[in-house]
Every structure is written in C-alpha cells, then in structure tokens.
Image (tube, rainbow, N blue to C red):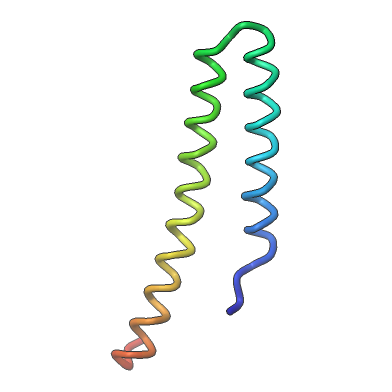
Length: 68
C-alpha cells in the first residue's frame, strides 16, 4: 500500500513520549499538565492520521474517477 514506515515510527514515538511525560507529570502531582500533554499528543497524532486518510481518498478518487 505504500504507507511510509517513518510515519508509523513517528506516531509510535510520539505515543511513547506522551506516555512518559504523562507518567512523570502525574508523579509530580501535576495532573492538569499531564492531561494537556496527552491532549496535545492526541491532536498531533490525529493530524498525522488525517493526512494519511486524505492521501488515501485522493488515490481512491484518482482510480475511480480517472482524475489526477
């Protein structure tokens, strides 16, 4: 299918970093900051996934509608 492995590793890396920061911040008693870090990490990954889905729809559109 041609999904870049780099993008998959980037998503996994962001998930690991966010989980680590969340754990550290909760350990220090900064639960609100931990929730913000998790939310921002989720939004970043959501934008990455949206770009993948957008590319997929463009490829489907070009195949079925014969447009480029």
